[in-house]
Image 1 (tube, rainbow, N blue to C red):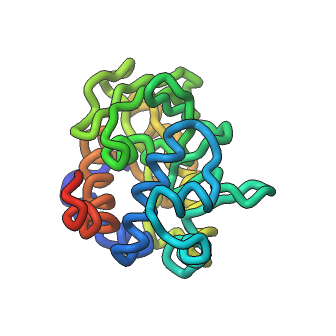
Image 2: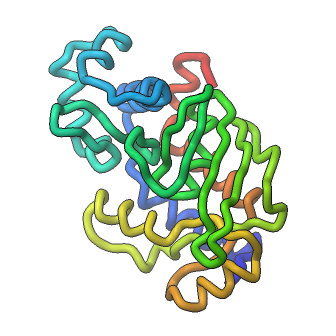
Length: 225
């Protein structure tokens, strides 16, 4: 199914309700974590503590708390490997920032994370239907280049998700891809119940809305966006 603007409006509120809401303190930590991960290396709690001028114990408390816990993944040494859709470990969607190759958990992540970083990114992701590599340039303001002008994005209706927050995010990402064309996306969604397609522009706009829902207070407080 290809979603119209009306269809997307009906599901977007329910979809965004799945994402945790953060306190301003959690928002500040999350924004900084995105930017430290963009260096291409795992981030220690000590690094976060030093940059934020926050006690180590408080950083650890926030990262393990109800708000951020579902969005954070650690390595065996306790360093952060991934947060909120961005990862330094190899995944399906390559995400290059400042010449460094990072990765995103799903295709939609690569559309909203550039705004969080305040930097453009080059994205490379394989269409699961055709096998073609889709390449995009995504800035904080939108998609500026696409190897496939008719590329679309798949999403999963919120009603198809259940479980705790981390399981929900993992399940969601298993159904969110770029497709080389609407026809390729429709062939795939027919076989995956509960999925639908939206345009790159629609997906980018939804991502901006998600960022605002989760991080706008910290942007306003810090005077940065």
